[in-house]
Length: 293
Image (cartoon, rainbow, N blue to C red; front, side, top):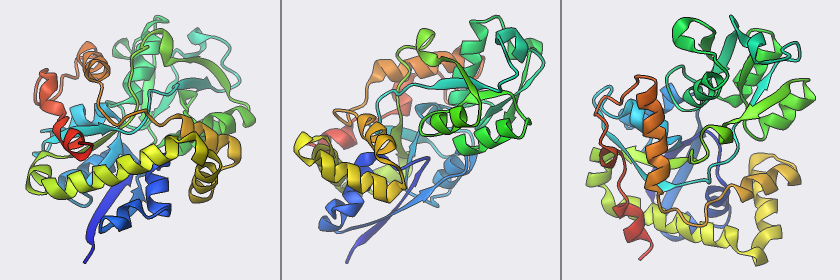
């Protein structure tokens, strides 16, 4: 009898797509279903209520939500490399000063890419704390782009594949995060600490199957097949599928220095996590290590 797992994601990583299509999870007796979240608030609250067991998310969401409403969360594996986080503006904005007094689109106002956006703006002498701009919670990237097209907001982080759609809609790329945050990491798998402790064999089984799918996806001999799978599963063209494949990490092992970068950013904006500044409280490398022995 299959063991069921529900995974909540912002987007399906290439290894997860391959694992589902090629039967890596099913071969280990896992019935894995995936749901795409509209925003980080729904995602993390659902994880705390065990509406789903695993999330693919930004590490900042682990920091911001662990202990916030009772449940504790930990990152357990790296899902993607730290991709570029481009900042787009509406076409009438000609320089950074043009954003003064404007509303900007974010997923949630106090997590993840919103803080990245704030850090880039700070480098251009724009501070939210003194009222230079406001942040409007619009949800995931597609919703942020829609709000900019409708003139509800004037800038936002629009990551791939929506960056190409943003350019097609006339939005202008101003910058990306790398100048001020070169070590900002990609996404992680995260779980509730209590659920993980009570279901360790199941979690290790999932990570083991995902890791085998990762190895398959990274094998150059499988590239054409993997691109076809990703394109079909995610309804992407070949270029977008190749970009998603390029985001895969060489290993799912966590990179603590990158995680610390996220924690430092949160502390900078006086958003210290509810459970404090001890980084080790927010990740656990043992699950992935055991899954890849």
